[in-house]
Image (cartoon, rainbow, N blue to C red; front, side, top):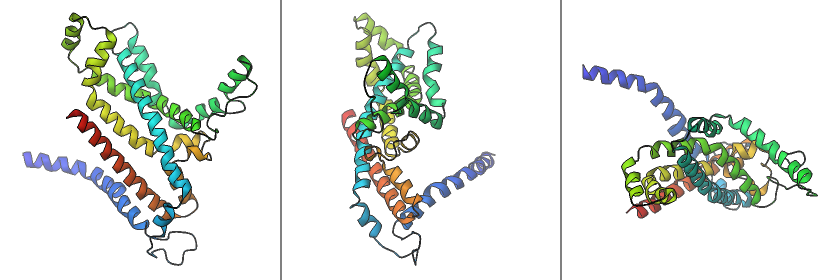
Length: 289
């Protein structure tokens, strides 16, 4: 009977497993194989095996700079995400009147369409008629507005990081909130008896107890940073040298029919993400030891 039930369970899982293998493992292997080919318009032989794609990538200043850009983005976005999500979750974990309403409000960005979010922020950041520049010029008397995402500096990437932090706040806040509610109240009661204030409880009890949750959010945020594309493309910063990302470069290669080059760039991005993830795991485990 148990074997029959187990068989039924595996049969229900089979369609998902098949789709996962096709759209994950097979595509990864095909991408690796295509990265050594010349999949370009007019190519005489698609399977003309070559290392040219990899040689070109390491001489392509725009692609190499796009990796530096996402490192800068991660350095801004990940700490912002951790700090804001943790503080908001700590505030919403308190037993206050109307706290459920504010939990819903802060979670709204997580269920808002990414396209809608990007277009709203695109309007806010617009150099000519955007809300931010309208306020600065008409309310504060500035002669000229600020170049937000069009600035030829890493200030543009900082503006992009603000958008992604805002849109990801709800989901990360919810993860932190669920973890906080699993912490034993006796720890806080004991700290109160010792005279600890709210800030001391947060730093001495809450933050250490949420170490594994923080590590999970850091890892996912780092992976998301290297996959940054939709906000950059939709917010109108795709042509800015300082907001180019590896995925925008991969998309451009595909758009120009250079499938082999795009596959090689994808392989390089995959390796970079793996290295960064392993380094992060190593650092966190070393601190936990």
